[in-house]
Image (cartoon, rainbow, N blue to C red; front, side, top):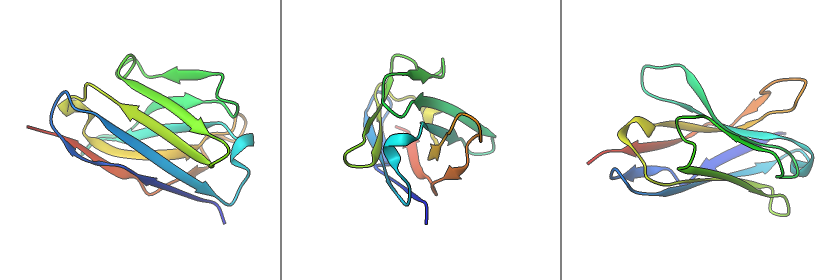
Length: 118
């Protein structure tokens, strides 16, 4: 059974940092591209960042470029998102998503909530 379990969310003040983790099981993590997607209250999903299976190709949404860093540890089957200089508009439910090239985003975690507020 494919499982993606996010953790690390919480409440933080503007300008603060958080590190999200996504523990994966049920498939060979090192062979799959992955993404982070977020959904703010009352809005649709927004793609945040992508990393290919080997970690060499990385992309970011313009809204987070320079502030967020995606990474992965294939030995630990874990995906990360380091978030810095957080803004209130970063408040959202953050999802870890399996993102293979031909099938689209096929498996999603349940999400971890990030709230940026003073």
